[in-house]
Length: 252
Image (cartoon, one colour):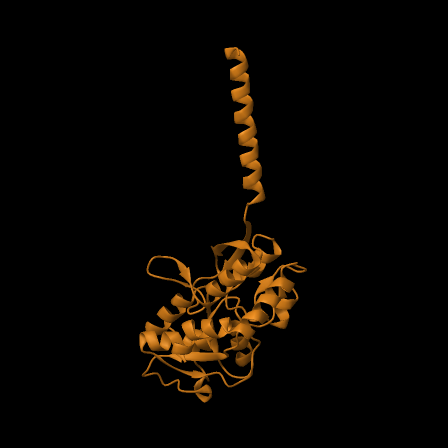
């Protein structure tokens, strides 16, 4: 057998093996979902001391993605930019402590609710702001684009209430600690965490109920049905209760 023929056989074999290897890789390629969140909302999403994004919503999204056979990529952004990211199809879904309000439903679709906590006002321990009756004339910080911003504006239609809108919850807490606002208006589970961690005080918003939290999708997303199925399974098999116990129950 000539050297030239052996060389041709060897090259052909290498090409064949390479092509086969590429085909297997493509066939086994993991599907990926891109999730948008705003990692400044503990215990739902925040960064740990290693800089990793962790929280209730993160564990929920990872569980759903795994059950559906997807790899999960998480993108951190400002809360007020999340709906726009969905509308521009830069992310596949948003899990960020987002309440399924009627206003948001005009722009995005939602899964079934997975959590409901209500709202509260967080104050300093020595504050004169002790309850809803004390809100008259006070300065309150809220996060841009949240249901709490909407709620505070509704309250301001009835009482003399000054609202300061900021883009990050830690900035709101700093405004409170520095005395530039009298209170911070937050989701109750988030507020309770700050009260406990920073030795603050607070009281519940008794004005009206609010929608629960849900996962948001671009309008007409094909993912909603599958996500709802997994959320229902998690309610039945106790996985949602485990997440509540891990991230929220200890704050209540």
